[in-house]
Image (cartoon, rainbow, N blue to C red; front, side, top):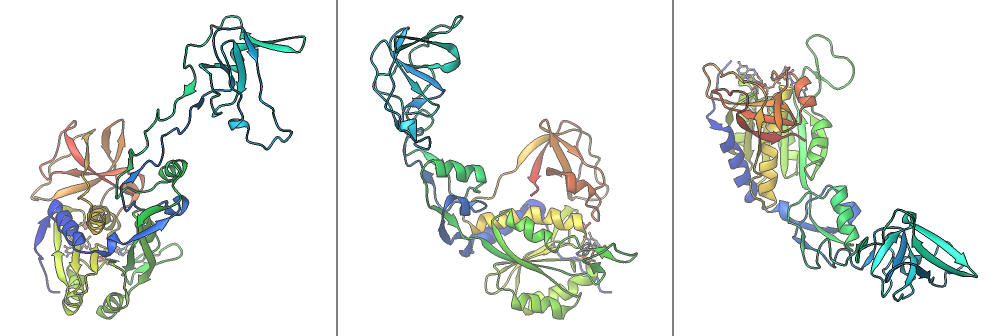
Length: 408
Ligand SMILES: Nc1nc2c(c(=O)[nH]1)N[C@H]1C(S)=C(S)[C@@H](COP(=O)(O)OP(=O)(O)OC[C@H]3O[C@@H](n4cnc5c(N)ncnc54)[C@H](O)[C@@H]3O)O[C@H]1N2
Ligand code: MOO
């Protein structure tokens, strides 16, 4: 079996190479316009500014009475319609010193109102058809402005709400919707197609000895969707050059991702096929554990190929390492910076290696706890991880600060 030792780049360099390659692709900057609910999961294509003051009118923060002057207050009420479905939030009557009028939370502040008094802090007295409102015993009258939500107190009109390139979560979409947005400019999803190799891989049932249940088909697509990609269903490939060539030739997605075939036995097939496709390597292997056999290449027509190792942990650590820089580049965004955290325990030095390590970790109370069961064929640790911590080959002592790579 021929042995290859493809040139290895540093992990951070591999990320930079993919980011730079992404910047040369323009497809990731295509813009669509979607209503807020449909925009969830997409990335904003523009900076978005508030269309109005937030809140956009003076209102009550509590159910009770809008009051003017000091108690007792004479109760004045608007003409309420005989229909419970009517919006009475905007039904007001102007008040003068010595008067109170009922108000609901969010109700338009009546002209002349100086404060809101909460319903539960009041007592009503009705004598001869005239109702007065006083403070209940033990409560003092409200200060001027009490429980009034002032126009613009959250944000003024024209304020930057969201920067271009922000992932639109349901809560962000709700915020934009509240601000009056009916249409949001979003980046078109980056199209992707995945394929997994491995004649020993089965996709249903409990695997027998010498078989392994697939860790990628369907799961990679779901993972890609969290990053604003539209992924076609995974293709299953036999470990043959023919299938790999077919995958490259029939996939029109902007990003092609395959798993397996990256070790010394499979790499010849991959290398030969990529050469036939006139691909240019962005990196051929990486100085990192796990995942050193990961590769990335650009095809002549601009599609990007990402080769993930077959070992499951190695494949996912490679995906988390290289997909975000590529997508950021394709969207014209900077390389995403990494957070850091103190590690909760010592990490011994690697013997005879200059490679960085990506270690599944649980970040709790601002400390990164390395998880056990993290060999490259294992998913136990990763399945519980919130991050990968990036450890130096020289090791660390507890309390050292290390970069954190998000998992998704
Ligand atoms: N002589 C050498 N052997 C290996 C080397 C090496 O440098 N020299 N590197 C090791 C490392 S590191 C990795 S990672 C793997 C990479 O192997 P491949 O990318 O070629 O993938 P396979 O050989 O097909 O599979 C490796 C491993 O992963 C399992 N696998 C594959 N596909 C799936 C799948 N869809 N779902 C679950 N598990 C899968 C497969 O059964 C193997 O156990 O090579 C090492 N060997
Ligand atoms: O990529 Mo391999 O162990 O480094 O799993």
